[in-house]
Image (cartoon, rainbow, N blue to C red; front, side, top):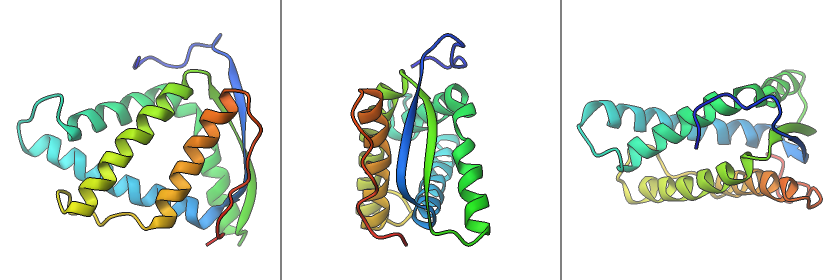
Length: 159
């Protein structure tokens, strides 16, 4: 995965996140940010192979952050909607075609990370089932819509 900015000529796809549960989206972001902080601490505290999970995850998050930074406007929209007391909202994010493989890679690595939370390898608690379900739905929507399939509304609870 390249660490360069998204090329201006790369085609962007509108991904419609229908019935996006705002509070659950926020809880999911907060959980994985906690995991990433723990990985950053692990990666800096102990010499490890660049193939170790903390190093691979940090490298992926760093690359995704640089490559897709301009795609994060929905987080601001989500926070503003939550401040207004909204619970659910339809959001549209604009992702480059390259987000297809990045979403697949991130999903696989987060499954691995969730296992480390469950088995006690990490101090961060395992994510609740609704957080995992939301993360999978979100990444699946990016993958499906970049591939040309129709949007599927969030099927679960809105909390």
